[in-house]
Each structure stands twice: as C-alpha cells, then as structure tokens.
Image (cartoon, rainbow over all chains, first blue to last red):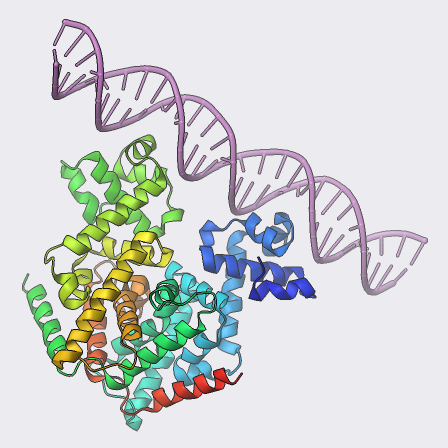
Length: 215
Length: 215
DNA sequence: CAATACGCTAACCAAATGGTCAGCCTCCGG
DNA sequence: CCGGAGGCTGACCATTTGGTTAGCGTATTG
C-alpha cells in the first residue's frame, strides 16, 4: 500500500529513520498505537523490526518521536503564526490526513505531549478571543475560559470523528478534503450566526442544572 | 479499586455475567479496548479469565455486548424520548462517567455499532433541526446535513476530550460533572448567541477555499 | 434418585509481541 | 591500507495474549 508519506521512499532518498517514523505515523494514526506492532511498522518502512528498536530504543520512544514530529509540523509548519492567529484551525486544516488522524488519536490517548499541546492551544485561543471581545468582533462570554476550552475542543473534534463525518456526508474518506470543507463551513456558520434564535436552550440548561442541584 | 458500576457487586447480587460486562465497560472506557486484557477484566470482576470466554465466546463478543448495553442505556434510558427531543444531549449528560468514556472510545474506534448510533443520531438531529427551522426557533443553514453532522460531532466531542477539558478547567476528573456543566453551558452560549459579531470568519473560509481550489 | 445442564475453574496451548544480542557490511578518517 | 563507527540484520528470548479443553460442583428436572 502506497501512501502520501511513504511515497517519497519509493523514489527515494529518505533516511531509514525518517521512513520508519512516517510509517509509524500512518499506522498509529489509522489503527491506534497499541494495535500496531513494531513488526508492522518495520514492514511498511521496508526494514527489519530490530532496526526500529535500534533507532528508537523502545516502542514508547518511537511514539514520542511521532508526537514531537507532528507537533513540530503544527507549530512550525507553513505559517508559523497559524497557531497564533486562528487558534490552530488553519494549521489543522493544512496538515495532511495521516497527520490529522494521528493527532486525533494522540488527543484521545491523552499522551503528555498531546495534553501540553491542548493546553497551549486553549491558552492562545483564550487570549485571542479576549482580544476579539476587546476589539468587538467576538461576543463576550459568561465564562471565557470554558468557552475557549469548548471552542478548541470543537475545532479538534473533527480530527477524532473524521470517519463518521465523512461517512455521514457521503464522501470517500480517502480524499476527505471535501467533507472537511463542508463541515468546517457549517461550523463557521454556527460560530457566526448561532444556531438557536431564542434563549430556550439556555433556559433548558438552567432547568437541568437546578434539577440536578436539588437532587 | 471500587467504582460506580462494580460497587453493587460488593454487596452483591449481580450475576457474574453482568459483573464481567461492567468491569469490561469501565476498563475498556478508561484504558481503551486493546490495552485491556481479558485477564484484567476477569480480575476486576473477581472471576477466572476462562469464565469471560465461557460467557462471551471471544473478546470481540464481550466488546459487542458492551456496545449493545451502552447503546441500550442511551436509547432506552430514563426518558426514552431523550434522543428524540434534544438530539441526544440529555441522554449523554445523564449517562455516568464510565459509560461516557466508553462511548467516546467506541466512537473513535469506529465500531460498527458506534457508526450506526452516530448515523442515527445525525438523522434524528437533522429532522429536529429542520423542524426548528420550520417553527422558527432554529436558524436556517446553507447546508443542513453538514450542520446536523457537525452539531452532533460537537455534542459528542466532550466524550472524547473529557480528560483535556476537565484538566483545562482545573477540575478533578473524578467528579467531573462540574466541568461538564461549565463547558456545556459555554457551548449552549455559542449555539444561542454565536461567537463572532461579523462575517469575517466566513469570508476567511471562502478565501481559503478559493485559494485551495486554485491550487 | 439419576441424569443432565450450567456456572465455573485450572491447566494448557499456539501465536504474537516488545526487546536483546552478536555480528555483518559499508563507509570514512587516519 | 587499516580500524573503528554506525546502519542494519537474523536469530533468539521471556512474557503476554486470546482461546481451548477437560473436568469439578451444584442445582434443577425428569
């Protein structure tokens, strides 16, 4: 199976170490870290499974390298300021499907690196939204920190629900950029115009809270 | 370690089969299905690991039983109409932490049962939103289906990002109901009032699409 | 009372996994 | 030309995994 990241290894001049990392990235992303054996990674990279250990010490070491690599792509990719300006949205969209899948897995597995990245994004996004409130292009919130957190979560959610979204939108998830464009547009629509025309949901929430508190 | 679901087994009158299922539910939810061995499940349920196989045939069988059980809780829980009325939100909130965690994992692992449930929720939610548009309490959308999909994804996202959210909100994730209340409130706020005051995000999105299309 | 069914377990098995080790081959500096 | 360093491998190992089997005890049922 040839894929985006390993393709260059066919032509190739990629160091074996990088090939292993890329292979791991894809497999970890699509299958989940613990469902992928070192032998599978080695096979996809076209090397012996011993070489994987030779380079990365342990499987955990390999995963950490993947984490670091993906994070470096997000942080230092085309448009360093992407994280600053749009709260990570652009960077996430730019990243290829394998990287996005890997990121989704990483966030769910709750690796330390992913946690750090998440916190960082929330922090940056929080400041960005505050600035927006000050400048008038963002609405004020009753709970700015919670809003920043849920906003980031919502931006990242499609990474985790990738497969479901493209399936529901009747798209092949091979080239799921179309699906990505559709649901991100729908999301921005909600961010811009809202979803409800009145306060009934807010009232309902208050009711739930009251009911819950009295229990 | 004593927990909500297994507690009753201490007193107990729960059938061993149910105890195994509950133990599996928790472990699968917290650790991820493939990181949990049948022996670990058996140990937590206080039975031999052979009994697990005796009852469920295979590990996959056990997982399917967990799927079915959780789904039955969601569909038939207190307030059968929960799924109908609020697009699943109330049901999700009502479900205990172990169940929520399990659901999050299931959606990410992309099990067939989870996929079916997701599709179903999108379907119901789509009709619900259409009705809202007709009745005037929901705003019309340029792409109703995509909006329903992203809306459902956003409602489910906290299941997957549970740990990150409660960490960012400085809550112990043991009793994370407080965190749940905070971010769900923030979410409803966005749904009701929107996030942006002007169309700049929509314009930016159009720009990205144009740029992308011309590539 | 006998037979059968069922909940349950210990012992066992083959396969796969992460990790180690000794050593090969090639390339580069002295 | 030599010698070490490092990329790389095959063979090997202990452990863990999901799964099987034979059999035990009990309770229900004819």
